[in-house]
Length: 331
Ligand SMILES: [Mn+2]
Image (tube, rainbow, N blue to C red; front, side):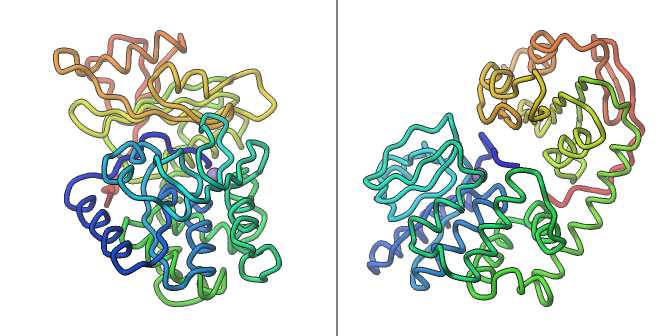
């Protein structure tokens, strides 16, 4: 969905993209910073490439904009992300992000950042741009009606970082027609396979009003999509806490649009942010208490039971095991 608070970029990859941005700057090419997390970010990036084929796109997560090298550049275009410091044009629709660019295309009521990006880039009447905007709107509002958009969404959700740059370039040139063959078709097929695994997990979970789910290992599925799937089946409020490393956790919160639950509130209390209906956080546990985030979240949500995708182990909360077979994550 829309928000990917905290998804970080690190290490070697980070040096590589920082160098890419630097080289682009030295060559006098326009540079864009877009959200790596979803179709909206990638569609916005593709719109930029469509307007500036010579331009260079850098894809990062919302938490990356605080990094020194991101702040060091003046970005010609920023989409679906908080302010990176210096920006000429920014297209965004997140309530929690403060405007900052010289030219802001900021509207918290816009269904997707790509809508604003098309406006900012003067592409409102371009046929391919319209397709990309529509794809971003359908995915960001979790209301996918077009089969090609569904395939693009699955391709993006399960794409690696390098693959996402390829997707941006393909979309910029061919729009959604790029899904019909070649690498994007392959990525979509892989997405379908992983999505089917996700549906099996959804089947195993009870459809209670509010669900607290804990995933002690990454299962190679899109947890954001699992929240959406469970909401579709009638759950009002879904919180999935995923342990991503020894001390690192990621929260995915999803709330029904018309419901009384507020994900932005929960996520911000856990150190993240987002929308009322979709928010998240990356949580680092203290070294002396590496399971603390589980209990901190339980304190906020007061669940009757914690559904664990795997084994309950030593969780000191009422716990029910959901027997999942990991297919290996690949991410
Ligand atoms: Mn968005």
